[in-house]
Image (cartoon, rainbow, N blue to C red):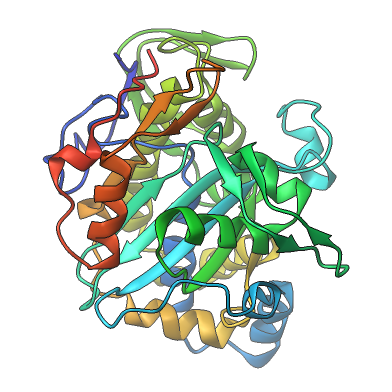
Amino acid sequence: MTHSATTEPARRAGSSGGRRRTPPGRSGRRRWVRIVLLSVLVVVLAAGGVAYWLYRDLDNNIKGVDIDKAIGDDRPQKLPTSGQNILILGSDSRAGANAALNTGHVSGARSDTALVMHIPEGRSKAVAVSIPRDTLVTRPQCTKTDGTEVPSAKRVMFNSIYSQVGPACVVKTVEQISGVRMDHYVEIDFAGFKDLVDAIGGVPVTVDRDIHDSSSGLDLTAGTHRLDGTQALQFVRTRHGIGDGSDLGRIGLQQQFMIALLSEIKKQDLLGSPTKTYRIADELTAALTTDSELASLTKLAEFGRSMNGVDPSTMDTIMLPVAYDKVDPNRVVAAEPQATQLWKAIRSDETIPESAKKSPAKGG
């Protein structure tokens, strides 16, 4: 697959060798930049010294979900060598502030983005594993927030689980297919992403050819552009203007934008501007939902401080290896033995072998 964009700074694509425009099967550059938002929040909160009323406002913004209560004991064992694992979801609800973002007219909400962020013991390097939203999985038996029991079902599209049963069932599904215990859950929506980009004054990206996508609304000429929040959202959602038009085809753009956004945040030194810091934190926390253990400013800050040694520029970004489904070629399934190798390496906190990063489904 040939991607149509690169970002600044040049080719900082993580420990997988800094390769640019690599196909999803090799470095798995995945959808959206939702993982960035957690990293930004960590930076914002690290400033400290915020007045109590500011703290209270930000703290009240955060919404919590009791994942442990919803799932119960039917979970993988937490291994001593497993580090920290966070499931990061991007909700694609078209309601509320999201309705004005030209994101389509699909009812309900889905997990438009799913990233398993693995932070090894020692907090020195992170791995982000993306699960394509069109992946067919076996959904385990789950309980809705109203107490209704939902039976297990096979060949369920991954991104439908969020709307069908709720976030706790998404966590349970990821744990079932990976064998990896999720320590935390973080969710953010379209509006939060847009507001973050606008708050930092846009993000520069470079495209090596024109991109015109009437579906997302993106219209860029070849060259360097500073994208505002709306354009950034169009950029990471573009698929008809790149590759074969599939969901997998836009993964490269999304991962490249994530690196550009992180670089811009680092360049701006947000801790030197309290006003901007608060504005970003206010917008971000308002769009944030976490597990109950992280659902406070204090707990988020404590967790953030524990991640101070992680350098986002060295993050290893991988897509869950997938193959086109034999029954429905518009869907994908986990490719074996690559997927098993990938999850095993994460469970044991080992280096992910190159063979576990190769995906038969290339996306164009």
